[in-house]
Length: 248
Length: 324
Image (cartoon, rainbow over all chains, first blue to last red; front, side):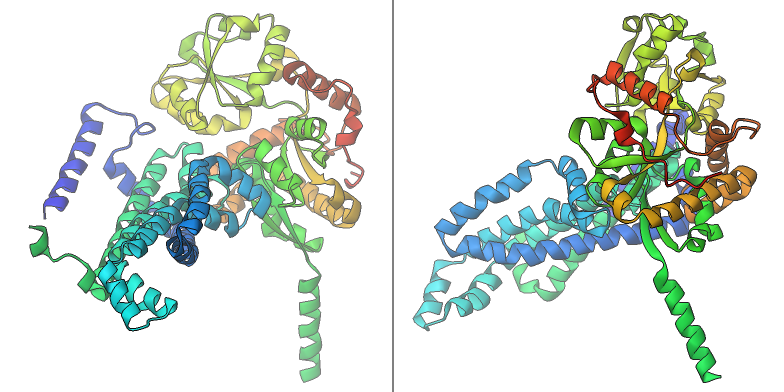
């Protein structure tokens, strides 16, 4: 209830400030104007949203597919960790906005460069969280497994992975949020559809309400996807989430 | 009967398979400037030439040239200055096949309330521009032609999206734009009770080529037949859009629903005036006048310090254009 009230107050303050200070629509449109623009072009916005969602989910899936084996490699030995971590940090030091145009030249103007940018923005927190989870598996559990002569694979799948579920979901929550940012960066650089493209085109066409509308949808998309990960965690891995009583 | 259906079916698939899939890399988002291409696609002019055309929007002339030179698309469009710079400075394998602008569409947008009506009035004023904007490079030359010392004008570099707001809010005295962008800024000027005034660089004799359609060297060498057909369909599209501007603007809106019909029409009418003359009386062929190409390059040598010994014939290949 409280979050809804906070959003409502923000909305009223937004609308009121635009009216009272007579802020021009091209600088900061009122919520009512953004809503009206949205209703006029709801089909168009839906198309752009679906395009962005596709890139976000594709990049997110790519992040998972690459992060899991990487995290396992990092956790496998200090030597591998020392070899891989500097490279991971290197990928994060390069500004993706600067890298995206180069990727487009190398990989073409299709979906691939957008997926790669999304992956590059999203995968790092997932790798580090999962690696931390795998490395901080309680030692007594590992010892127990070894006393039963568990193989490396059994130890990984039956002990280390279940133990690192809370860390993994921490990484997944960050990754899905960053994936929205990554997809938008990719669409800014090369796309003919998607919310990032819509923001750029609407700004260039001097249609500020449409650009703000796309921004709001992007924010909502981020919130919805984040909550989806939270729900998946609660439903399928309820044993790993702290009980409310524990937090009090 | 069954055989007839089979033959018809085979004939259909053969004709579909025979279409060359070609991607046209635009240099910018789908403004009305591109209405003829959308119209040509909708009218089937490219299919008539055996081409299944797709387009990709770009983020500036330099961006588009890089994508084409890098192999992303065989054909692109953009300012000839980007093509010349890429070829002369970095050896990028791209050549202009036809010109779209007969003369420079570079201009300065100002508000009537500023009292500025001539470049000479800009002394001591501040203009906003984007990083690497060609207007910034060309301005000193146009200013000297107009009798203004360019050093008396200050420039502030901003993001492209901030430029119109800075003008409307009177934070700067002018912003440089192609004349075709007037339809986006004009309503905002009217909204604050002012009027938009456009001062084209060409008014002071700044007469150079601007936009062109270009292709990579290997495409010119190995797919000249496809390029000839592409150019034929494109010229046909331009001529058709000249005679049917409203329909072209409508077809463009249909393909690009983010655009507005009025903006599409205004953008195309502006370019159309540049190509065919305001009264549509000029003959436009897309062929180059090499003396004017040299003049265009000389401006780049002066404004950007390009290699003065570069042979400009290396960057032009207009022999694939249909004879009109």
